[in-house]
Length: 457
Ligand SMILES: Cc1ncc(COP(=O)(O)O)c(C=O)c1O
Image (cartoon, rainbow, N blue to C red; front, top):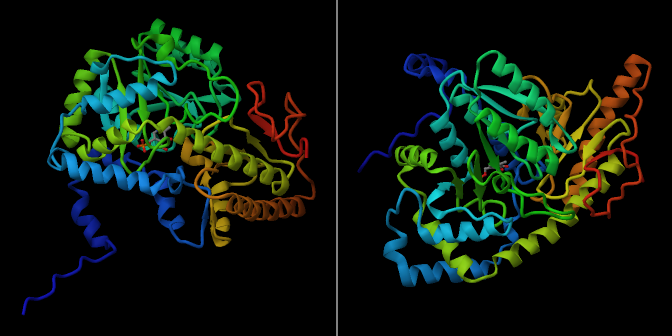
């Protein structure tokens, strides 16, 4: 009888680490784990209400539609769908991408498009193409937590520019660029999520968009416009994408089907000027040859059905309601010293607590109450963000949002009470914002995304 194969030990012993350490590349020393990845393992426990992930609600996708498309692929194109494909992606996939970008007013040349394994790979490929160790990248503070490990693994120097209710402070960006120029340092690119930013939920104003594009031209540096959420708008008027304002000379556009269809299919894309695209394609070849043929066939079939805009409309209805539930729950359960954003789209609210609360410590306490969020530090390269948290409202239903926020509110309240007991004084609530009468039901372009707790309760 054959011996059963030995199972590898689940945990790496110290001796194992020593054995391999000398083999690691230098860059592994600056590699960082994505905070979300670590959290995902914990939040996978069914008893945990996770407001941590950036998960779209895939249970809203009709299973019969999924079954019909996959059956059609199996019956009509099995051999092709199971085969390798071109590195830059199928023309039919690019047609779908053009429809999605067209819905936001963009019309790129299909030759400038590459289909990638999710938007995450698009970030990675652009970094691989553009960054040498020590190169400067500018991005928002806070920034997309999943971008930080990519910048780190290419050994970039990351400069984060403060963000307010109108997105990245472009005046600060301008000052940072001037300082770098004075030091004879030319940054490689500005990375931005201009619409319904992950994690802050804020949107870059039209004026700032125009100035950002001008600055890129003046300094001859690229802008990586990462836009997974632009079509998930719950109110207000959409500002033009940076790509549209620039015409695609300095703006490299990154998109994904993850939030408007499915993250499981791992389909994203990048649009870049031909000289950049040529290098990106070489990088992609080396990484994984091509993006999944099967899921490209799925997207093709799905778009042929002609319902993709309707599905986004369905998602908008659902997520708008969940955002409102989250905001109402924050008003009910968070202390008056807290502030939070009120996003007009996307999947996230960014809440900031009194300075003396560390949200990493708070998370440990929250997990004991079976609820999770992303601590703010995950969105910074340095130690900023310690008293903030990212809360997701798309991945769970209304009741779980209410209960999750209630549980977090309870642990926050305990911290506030403890602080006030120990110090003998209470911290005043923040000054009122510009629009104290903002209401949860409102959905207009001039609604302030930043909102103070306690207003309009
Ligand atoms: C701003 C941003 N960029 C990129 C991604 C990566 O998405 P995917 O690789 O699923 O397309 C995400 C996912 O949450 C995101 O929020």
